[in-house]
Length: 269
Image 1 (cartoon, helix red, strand yellow):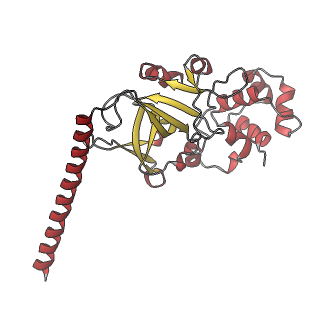
Image 2 (tube, one colour):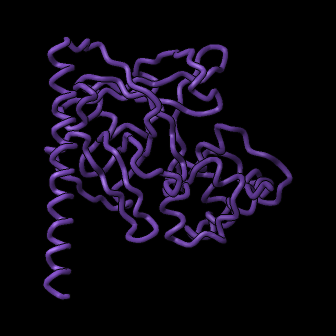
Image 3 (cartoon, one colour):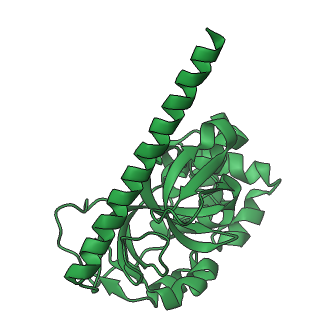
């Protein structure tokens, strides 16, 4: 069902605007706002983008969801907090995959919603069947050793996540946050219980930490990794040995805990 007209009216009234006020904001005739709200006319895509940008809602939400039935908590994670996602297309109208190298990450934190900034970034075409053609993808370059064995400098191929309730536990995501910028972590979804996400590093030297969903601007699910670092044999064996030692240490701790529980049960008996 199309809720576009009723949602435009709802969002306009929430801001206590007249139709003339809104028309002035998005640079259209006042009569068109009335036609949109009454369903007598459908706005063009660029007009819908302007409306979404101004009201800070997602395109899919403003068209397909009755926003009057969403409470504030739902709006935070189901699109109403998310602005229209700028994309770049080629001359044939095909969506391009935007690349965000490490040196552009700081700028992306400020320009993520700016179509001009997005269009100036490099783009790529990846003819992989694993990437759904109807989805929006981006490539982020990561730095640091917190997600080893994924090496620093790797490019993470990602897919846009619109509804943050769809974040799957223990999967890897690139998140754009207000406090830390672009981060790549394994995520635990605690939205239902605490409105937080727990971010974990694959490198166990880094402790997990939590962030509020209010700190999150974008979520991108990792679909693949591109790396130009070819590990040598010694590095590979060292990584394998480290993983084996981690497992052995965990087993030792578990055995110790079992012995402690057995000793405690004997003392009580």
